[in-house]
Image 1 (cartoon, rainbow, N blue to C red):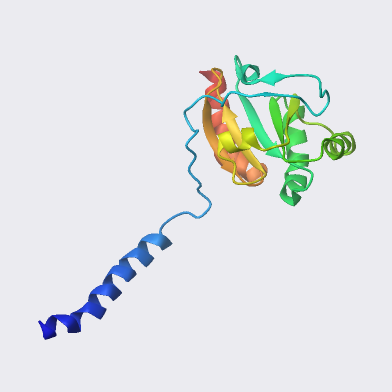
Image 2 (image 1 turned 135 degrees about the vertical axis):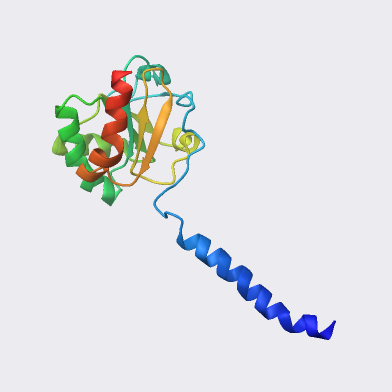
Length: 176
């Protein structure tokens, strides 16, 4: 029995080495979402442009679109914004979720930097973000014609992310 105790550190080291090796093989940028392949969660929210409006998840029916979670306090959102404007100019429908933000600042942001969104709902309390599983802004979801989330991209949408990840899926869903 005392000889077996000598091997305990070696066994612990082997187990930790396997766990470490497994951890190194994971992609840290890949963040799974429980919402992928499920409908956009139900919501009824006002828009940045019209606080009296009540928009629901029904806006995602009938076309492939992007749902972009953004905020004026988000530095990465400012980086991705010009590319979203380019996508919108190319005819890509983008809907925004102004996440836990000041609406007056959001209006000013969209006026100054151009508005790429078909509309942007105000998620002041973050409930829609919570239902979507948002970790933080920016996050972008690809929504199919039936209003089902088909992909989630965490971080800045730029030309590389569009060309390698989001764009091909967007085009495939559009052509289905």
